[in-house]
Length: 78
Figure (cartoon, one colour):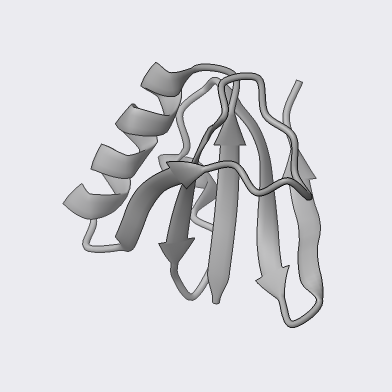
């Protein structure tokens, strides 16, 4: 499945991307899609069997699953 994780800081996105790659998960940094909001404007797009919440930096904002028609938010952080 394809996921998009947004973050409050660019550093958090970078740390998450590194953690994903370290665990063998295909990921990349990208601009946040217009359908989703983010404080820093950088997201991590990744493909995995599950959302890998445990690999997200503590400054994560939300995780969305990409669908055929857009995005479905599956978790938000405060």
